Figure 1 (cartoon, rainbow over the protein chains, first blue to last red):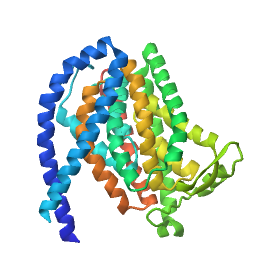
Figure 2 (cartoon, rainbow over the protein chains, first blue to last red):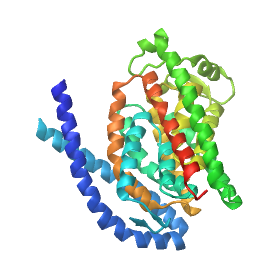
Figure 3 (tube, chains in turn brown, red):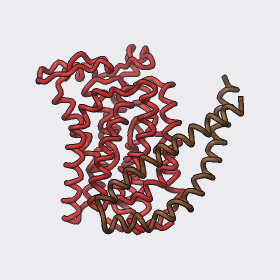
Figure 4 (cartoon, rainbow over the protein chains, first blue to last red):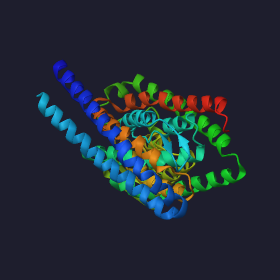
Length: 80
Length: 301
């Protein structure tokens, strides 16, 4: 039981580290580029901005969930 | 990092860490986490109207992930969720309109701060009283993983006995019949606080589902998350149109929340209902403490 917990915690820690690297890359590559475009949309087309905002946040959440699930599965598989 | 939409300068690491903590709490308690996220955004100088709108956007993403997890665990009553959606959307719009009124009056920061302190503290005081009373009782100790008991369950039973037509049955939640108006009222109140104080208002809706409607805690957590997706999506759209959403801040927060929500949702399997409710108690207190601190220190009020 204790061994199992340690294994899970180790997998979580490793997942966090890999995930953090991906997220930092994402901050600089994607969000930096999107900033100007979204700002323009927010200033000039509010309804379009509102719809885009919801699509972006749901889309990102689903993609991130897939990434975290994939990472966790791979890391747990490797530690077993 | 500079966020051009709100004109704020905030560290993305700070936002991701806040998102991560809120993700864990949201996945575990079925709340949007606005009682932490709103004050945390305010703490770094964002105006309340932006904190409320942006927090709602971040909550949409986080709750989609957590609700999917809970659905897989069988913790979502879809019938109840769809009925509640009507009241939730009406309430969210009413709350957002009140924000606009306060914005025009120039009182938005002060009024929301005071209301949030009162609401957060009241919920904590009530839940600590109820969950401790339940845990002390024999039934509370005997509680299984999904069967649930509450010290004030007689109140929910009385509500379920109300013959205010039309009545609906909620077999997934173990309720034979309940007035649709009661469900809509609970949803409206939750939606109103969602639009007014930000977030999904899980801090109101989750306790209301348990204590007023009599829904078992695990199902209340999952159904509440489903409801939060609907209310927060509507609230995000409404606030974005009114110029209160910085979606870039929300996207950064969501990177932390995505992983936290998974950890939180998985953890609910190891705790009983009254214990989940008791563990919930410090969260609104922390939110209230951050708001009080912000009231006393931030100069933007």
